[in-house]
Length: 103
Image (cartoon, rainbow, N blue to C red; front, side, top):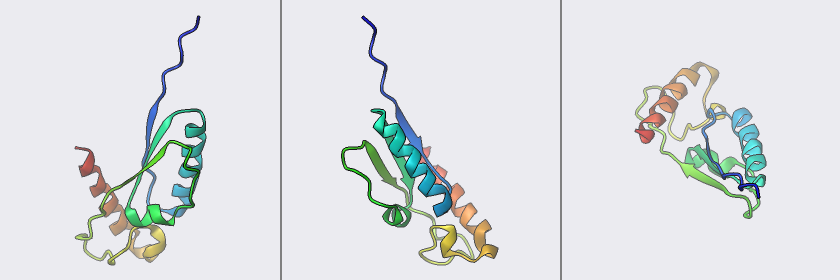
């Protein structure tokens, strides 16, 4: 008798742009449909922007606070759609700060 395949727990941490988050959400759903668990990591505001998914899928949304201490980053700016193109570098700096939650 063959041993059952182990279930995976996958972490997904897309860049703070809807053009990245939506495809990663689709990928997360495909992985969850295979019986695995996915932790989709983003900011609270971005998670609230995502379309609802079926509750029978094992996709957990993990919210991390984005630092708003980065100079020139507008308050409530949590995605590229929230900032002018000239301010993307400030969003990237704040995004890089999210990694501190993993250490």
